[in-house]
Image 1 (cartoon, one colour):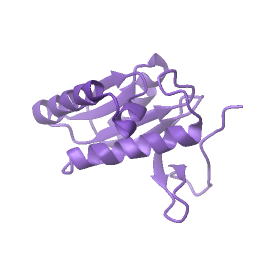
Image 2 (tube, one colour; image 1 turned 180 degrees about the vertical axis):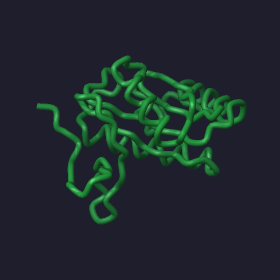
Image 3 (spheres, one colour; image 1 turned 30 degrees about the vertical axis):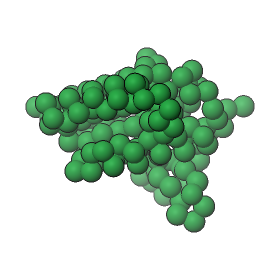
Image 4 (cartoon, helix red, strand yellow; image 1 turned 135 degrees about the horizontal axis):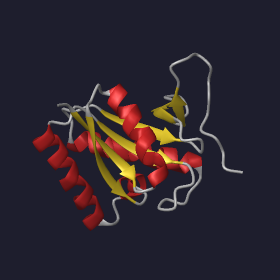
Length: 148
């Protein structure tokens, strides 16, 4: 049995798409879901230390007890726990992923974006501008959709 870990929003709309994506991405049988409202903001800003420690404690359980082969930090459109626009969501998700990577350097850590249609994309940063964009497997460029 192979596990991976998702630090994901508690929003039920994003659970299944994230689990399906991660099972394929990490060739895992199971996904340990660590959920909070807006965990990307919690980890990026690290203001609420009790919540940060709770997320880290549960992630350690997944890594140490289940042998997690990869960790994803997830941000999504229309998040009630992190009520900011898509650009800030992406920045928070990437900052949170960097933080998790510092804590768990031996395990691959990725940042995911789930759009309004529940499509999952990996986030990367442009080295020139520092802007976050979803990573596409096909050559056509795309951006995180704006909420109008």
